[in-house]
Amino acid sequence: MGQATTRRAAPAGTALADHVTALAEQTFTVADRLRRCAEDLFAAGADLAAMQPQVIAALGGLITGAGVIGDRSAVEWWMDSRPEGRTRLELDLDPLSDTFVDVTRQQWFAVPRATGRRHVTGPYVDYVCAEQYTLTFTVPLTVGGAFAGIAGADVFVGDLERALRPALRAVGAPVAVVNTQGRVVAGSTAHHLTGSLVREPHIRAALQEHVARTLPDGVGLVPCPLLPLAVLTWP
Image 1 (spheres, rainbow, N blue to C red):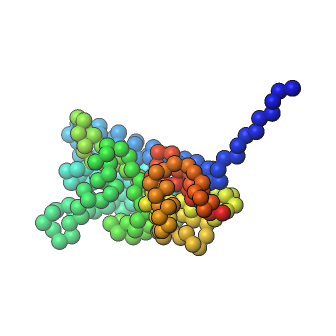
Image 2: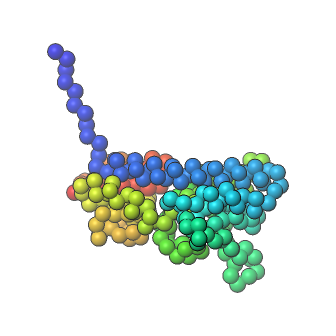
Image 3: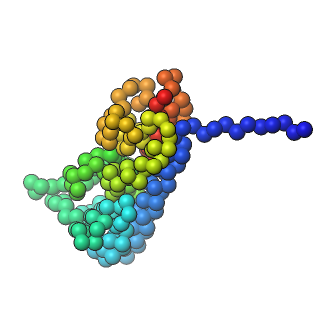
């Protein structure tokens, strides 16, 4: 007779981490589509305004804001997934103005510029646009091998939480989706509300290492692959 084998069960939270990753990849697909369009326009010396139809078409579903912000004060960003509510983002990019917005200091712009990689910023309260807890997914633009700006998409955390609710419940234990700084994106209990911070030093240290494990106190950590996000479960 052949030797019986046993299959080790996946850690709690794995399915939720996979679901978060899938939704993030869908959002990055939209950002990449806008990136390619913007790079073609920049290479041809054309105005970003020509992208308006593509940007508006990107809105819908979880995506409540999308567009391109160049490193030379070019902006084509639209907000609101409802057709009747769509508005173009107007940023004051004049450094001498009292209402100047320095986009280069924003994490969603600065990290892709510094690393040349895509990034997820948040959850944070987006005071520039909607004043709601938001995740911003951005990818760097390059023209001639040089950084030229970012393309991206905004997702309201409340919308993402509703999309994740069945998967959160299915874990069958207290669970939260957090970023690598321990900031909660979505949770299943009142102890882990959106925007709250996981304060235990050993959990925060483990999040920085971004490796799947069960901590000594029974807290499980499952990273979301290629994202600065992870799932935490409590016994």
